[in-house]
Length: 361
Image 1 (cartoon, rainbow, N blue to C red):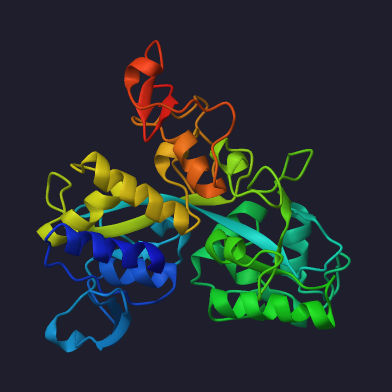
Image 2 (image 1 turned 180 degrees about the horizontal axis):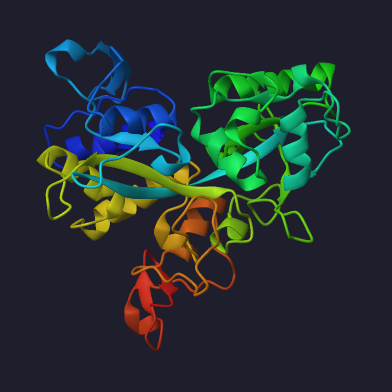
């Protein structure tokens, strides 16, 4: 989420706010735990100056500087040992994030099933083997507190303590390792990455990897998150057909009405929930979230209430749909089915002109 936070810092400054965002990098479950227990174990962080340059800073946790917001890829219930008090805290949701399996760019493999992935990472190439993923040193994973590993673990039915493979501390390390495996074991290399890293490093880039189509349990075919390996439209995520996705979670302290107790925190979270924002600020946040390879909720057609659970049986209808605008930003052009507009009267019926395109409501 660092690119989103960087842009949000600039947006806050442009709106005349004195709020300064400080980002402390840690695994999802740790971020939730520190807010839920009101403790902090990180003494350094990053922030952005007025020119957008990332700078480092020291945080004195002994002076009571406890994190205000816990960012996570997963629900607290997905984390071991993380209990959020029943009152006094709330989990707000940001944009949808997508998790993927990736292989070296010249790998012959194009897909992986939930069952195969469970065996590959459950046995780590020892004993029961799924060809070609038989070399533990070429199977890369994240620590057990990682939201990426935990969400994917839910999707493939593999307990977090049962994972095998070569553990890498960060997503950048997994990316580098999978890319490097292209020269030593291209067909046996496998890793797990969120779409921000995977999309930014597809074939043709310096640290290229290949996103594998995923076949969930009970499904007859595997699908990519997008309509093709060269697309960024996330149509299969937005329709619920690609299953490894979930909202960004923002945990913070709230009052009895569910409102953040810190007014600065409320201001920041409002940018993610869009509460009280004008059209220009909403558009800026959509642009920012799309640029970070996440999906604004206004572009989604399904919703779920649990970790990699069933999508709601009734299609999700955002209050202010932005599917056409999302694709115009993610793909560079809107689908031919989208009608450009400048006013509601050009759309007909109950359709509305939103962000330059006619939407269904």
